[in-house]
Length: 302
Ligand code: ATP
Image 1 (cartoon, protein in one colour):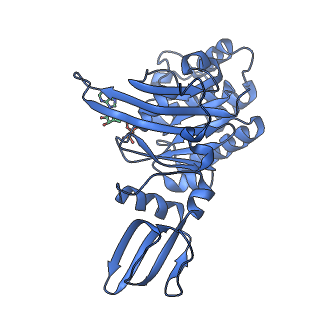
Image 2 (cartoon, helix red, strand yellow):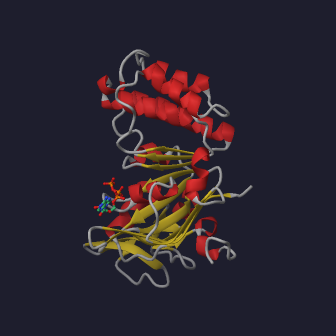
């Protein structure tokens, strides 16, 4: 048994004919077991590439990634991956797709949950996959993934084409199921509102590297929004600062007490993420549980 769901050390992936383009570079982090983790970052940041490595579908150009204590290819039966394009077999019906899921995963298959997800979306069991709408395909792909009852659920923008009610309902099911079974979830999304209330862990990837990683609450409380007259922000680490007239607003990592001249606020998750994305030079922050490099040397790092 391991308490680490994913551990990446110096993970790098190069694409292109001359392999000149790095999609991931020196990417290191740890995701503990049982967390529901939001994977956020701008378009082209490397989120899909990271998920595909964790799913064992891509091999690193350099560095290592371990999943559930082993290499990702050996962990495939314990992982479910819902890719962005939701690959399903177009000529199968909804019922046949679920039957296939059941037959491929006889030991762990959760028939009731998979059927419930499909029924709540009013999917006709006889409808062919090729005739389903984008949102209906997403729902079926999620039913297959949940039905498998994986230890690690990797979701690449799973809710992108679902209507708001379906999103809300499926997110609720996902959270309840993950809590009941201790499933680790790593889920990419661009909809911050969707993540704020459902995820307790965060990875911000930008330019192929992890910029922020750890418990969402700890990452937020490590930062302060300061407002006050233009002045010296030392000794704090400044992530972003803006001046309007004689007023300064800054997002900082506090290092010591703040003087009386400053008004202090805790940032929202959105403020924290946007400030880091607007300031590519800000130093990265990984909480101790997310820092793979702070762990004792393991097979993955030697
Ligand atoms: P998005 O939010 O738009 O889905 P992402 O964070 O998932 O983006 P990736 O799809 O992982 O980003 O892409 C990371 C980088 O790698 C991008 O610059 C992309 O152009 C490049 N890339 C991804 N797949 C390939 C490929 N098969 N061949 C060449 N380059 C690729």
